[in-house]
Length: 66
Image (cartoon, rainbow, N blue to C red):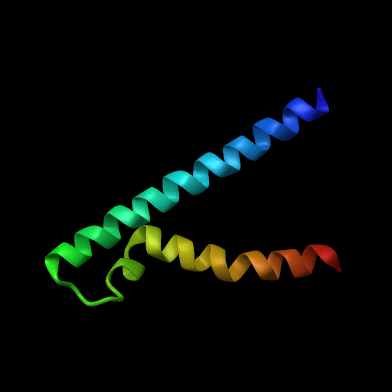
C-alpha cells in the first residue's frame, strides 16, 4: 500500500510539473509571436511560478537537510 501511495504522489507531482511547463511554453510562444521582449514570458503568472519554484526548491532542500 505504501508503494502505491508513493507512485500516486510522484504521478501528481509530475502531472503538476507538466501542466505548469505547458502553460509556460504557451506563454513563451505567444510572446514570441507578438514580438515582445525576451523577458515577457517570465513576467507572466506561469513564469513567476517557475522562477519561485526554481529559487525555493534548493532552499527548501537545504532547510530540510539540516
